[in-house]
Length: 375
Length: 146
Image (cartoon, rainbow over all chains, first blue to last red):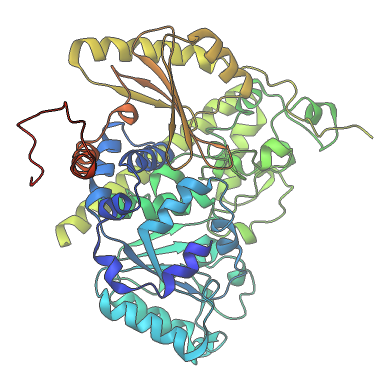
């Protein structure tokens, strides 16, 4: 973490070195880049051929300026990214980026902090990556949340103007999150509800998995472009499949074996948690594969159903402990058929999910083509 | 009060390891016929610890084992099937961050990069220039003036 602080006011001349030169200067071989690239490629399920290309690109790349804005949020996303459990490789990404502004992490405050932000924006015009954490209140001209004497809304617009891309980390900046929960007193919305003319990558989750955040940044840095996104602007590499698709308890679902309560025989045997409210079948995220705390576990492995925290509106979808089949909304109707009859239900659900995924990929590809055309 | 902390006791092996063996076989054929390597990332598969153990027991240990110390430790070993390598990158806290099966003649991580070789040549050249050479040593191709 000390590296993050050092980045804030590091001598600008160091940024002139390429990452390969910087590593060589420190006596580190290119294997470090290859190792890092393997890490990112594995995280993002990229073809093996990407590993070498990424390592070569990183060798020639210069440090990426990153400006991190915090709005209506709990700082859980920053807490998550700074509690990475693979320090040596995660440290590398902090060698690769120059975190020029972060209210939560920088030691300076007031005018000096705002000066740092404006300086970074000027020096890296059109090149910096803007990371946004938290929702943006719109009611009463955005006056519900201010920092540095200006509203979140104004700061976002100012910083987005010359950004290369925007990464909305967490469900709040992606979709409004908890601040937008009914009755949404501040009129909170996500970044993509306000900014319409910049590439936006949503990395939702409450909080997102640290590796998903760092992996997304690393991809932009090494490939020089945004990753392939789904219809909700989420990287398909991390959000292309549901928790249910990759859940190790899936075989029990297929056999129609469910825990009925959290302390019954089914729960002890590790049966599927669908009937005690697991939202895995409708939640696109990488928890079942990347897991948490350095790959130790994830909620379902700990005996609790998925809350669906990376999906829009998860905060207003009723009890976390109601089975999806009991919901009255569109999702509940779709899932009801799947849950009622065990094995047959599994097949039906999988069909729905595949159709949904195919649609998402087609839409994302169309959007990408459109973006490329416009670019 | 029932103890459900170890709630996944019944999930031992999923059978996924078997699928991987067939994937490896296809990858070996591709490597032989087209020279194209393949990497199977195990971290992205829903393998249980027992699946992994079963798989590693099946693949076994071949003739080569290597350790690489850069950005944390890495362990590389060839399985008892030539061309099938296990590559595992660890972080400084010894957590596994990359765990993969590489089907290749030699995993890329073991090869020296041309830039590093260039740096090595410069470094060695510099050392030799400053080093007092043995009086019996005569090599006319080496000039102290470079």
